[in-house]
Length: 161
Image (cartoon, rainbow, N blue to C red; front, top):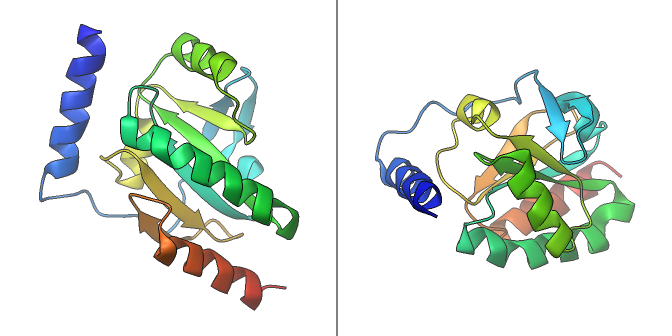
């Protein structure tokens, strides 16, 4: 618990800092590990689809509030080609596995235990929602799955039938 509290305070402090790292326009080329242990490229995870990437952690209360919205998004837009991807940040595979065993998550979850991808994305806060076009370009960032984010998703879907 103490380690989680220290991590939480560190991430909150970083998230509240006024100076953020420059935000990349495209996703970095990286390999990821799925929660089931399989390795996959980031491009493979996206599968050439419009993607919504959720950066989260098991201890993050705000992240937990976003999960039902992401589940509804996956159910509503998955058949239209939107891919929801969870990216757990800063936690061990065992912690994530235990969480996923206790909580139903319908979309794939990837692991970023050492913050490599979160750092490369310039994200220091949780939750963080990224909308990524099929070419891997980040087209929208938000701390929540809010109306502006949904509008961005709908506009992207209507412009690419």
